[in-house]
Amino acid sequence: MSFSMTGYGQSSLQFGGYKITFEVKSVNNRYCEVVLRMPRDWTVYEDMLRRQVQGHIKRGRVDVIINREHTEESDLAQVLNRSAVRSYLKSAEQLRSEFGIQGELQLRDILLMPGVTEFKEDAHASASDQDFKAALERGLDLSLEALMEMRAREGGFLAADLSLRLGHLEELHAEMAGLAPVAVSEYRDKLRQRLSGLNDGTFPFEEHKFGMEIAIFADRCNIDEELTRLYSHFEQCKALLKGSEPAGRKLDFLIQEMNRETNTIGSKCNHLTLVNLTLDMKAELEKIREQAANLE
Image (cartoon, rainbow, N blue to C red; front, side, top):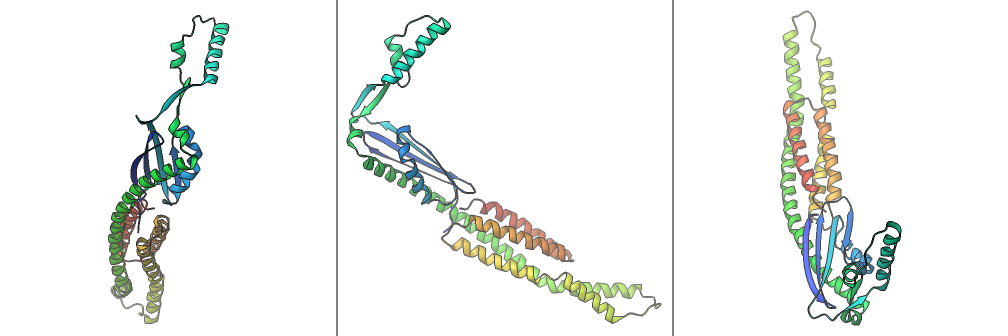
């Protein structure tokens, strides 16, 4: 199954006096990059959550946002942060002594300062570290399921579009294979006609040298190897799209190889229709490259 690198998932649960919400977003990236944003005192779980994401996603940038808010049922207690109070008072004293700023800190002013008081929750204290770890794993897993469902759905559309475009490439390939021998015979007929028009009887027509010229041209414009390799690349692309492993980077490599074979055909063939077919193939390959860039 093919997966897109773009997706979104969200979930929420209540635990330990909190309502915890999980939001997971993924976009294109060459590698797997996981960025987590969560309450500072939960960063102890960061490595565990990152590994959990990497177990689902092999490629793409994934932003994980975990927020919490106290529920009405939570048993809250407001605790004084004494070190923060001492720091504020020390700073106030330095302002007075060094800069001559007058005024007194009031109780209300101190209580409004960030970090002076902290919420402590009995429910959190009663929940073990393993309980919180399991709750975070469960919530993240639910949002990852929604994310993967969206990635799979979009990946299916991308794979279907790529399959259609590969079918068009195969049609162009079949036309090239049919025209390859015709190009030599057309060159032979045109060269014979040109030489016949130029021959005014003053020089003999040497069939042997004429045959050698045709053989050299046929060898120079032979594209059998390129056509064989293109066919092999088509089959590999189709197998990747049907497989269960991430296909984006392998497809990118195969598209580069197909472009190279197409360029070689264009430089070797001396036939207008073949040149036009290579241009059509290059245009289709560019569209395939743009679509494949969205696959995991």
